[in-house]
Length: 159
Image (tube, rainbow, N blue to C red):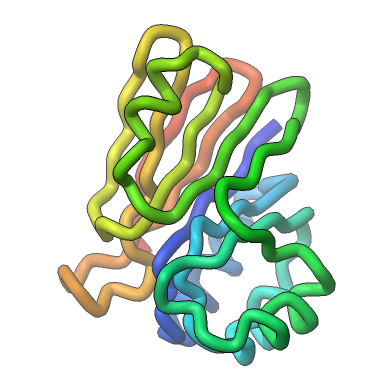
């Protein structure tokens, strides 16, 4: 199962559209957003995903009620844990406990955002991943990730 990972979109609608087009083109089956949508109107584009969707709130997400409504109830408080294809996944926004979660071996995949820096790191049997910033406002480089849950491999993709 291929999944798309995105974070820190920060209302950059052209980059969000590129990410949606990439995920739809690669036929990912589920997309996970690790927070900082910023505004609910981002779902005008995100709702065009041809995949399941799970998101969490980040520190810059203001109108949480409308974000949750626009997402169809698919944006959650962090940490959010769930399973896909038999893999245990936890999604957080801030990075402070990401390595501890990965080191705990309770999860197959630990996803975080906030730092705007892409990371793919194997810790014991856990894959630790930050897709970087899709919005490109901080570092000027827009990235997302695709993970193959079958073999637990990941790639960072520039938009």
